[in-house]
Amino acid sequence: MPDTQTQPLVDNAVTTTDRLALTLFFAVALHAMVILGITFAFDRPAAPEHTLPTLDITIATRHTPPPEKADYLAQTSQDGSGNTRKKVQPEIAVPEQAIAMQPRHPVAAPARVITAPSAETRVRQQDTSNPDSKKPDISATRLVERSMEMVNLSEQLDANLQAYADRPRQIFVSARTQEFKYANYMSEWVRKVERVGNLNYPDEARRAGISGKLMLDVALNADGTVREIRVIRPSGYPVLDEAAVRIVNLAAPYLPFPPEIRKEADILHITRTWEFSTNRLKGN
Image (cartoon, rainbow, N blue to C red; front, side, top):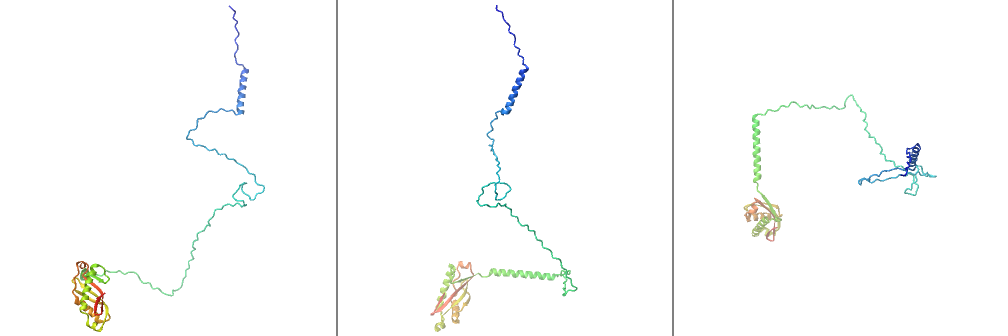
């Protein structure tokens, strides 16, 4: 059986030299990281989508050297282009200032006292004091008289109102009237007056050859009788005026008012112009 040789065990203990070398290595590595700017960074999570975008602004400052020959002096040196080629002196806008106006207060004039030893005229002041007025005593007789006066006035007023209510209703028509019910009645009335007038033409006017025109206002009652005749415009010949009035009376009575006229009128005034010429009477 071969002999087995036992090898000696190696001493693995750390020596001082090893520690120094390791320390120097870490020191050199640390200085290298500082000098070379080697850093360690952790991965940051991505920004959320709702984050607003940012804008980076870089402000560059530049110092412009002043010109050798300046046209004008300013607070700071600046080299701008401007909007004109002419040399214009800069102006400073001064806000308009309103002129302060102090309110003028009227100066009170000094009071002047004028005295006189005696007045030239004397003013007599009337005594305005009201004397104690006493109410007059009204007797019973006077009260009765006043009551009777009031009763009489009331009765008179009632009578006037009744008379006003009972007054006849009057309608005035003429040749210009166009309403059928009045124009038709007046046409029949004129034809009857002309027929009677031609039968009773005045002999004196026929013999003398007198002719002329006159205007009559004839008031008729509701039953067709003549109420009143007035010569509004005479002809200038009394014989013709009297003959016209006589002819109207001879032709009466006339037709009574139809129901449509009686509802509106108690008296009908017919104003017409009558012409006597060539032995004939004609209504115009």
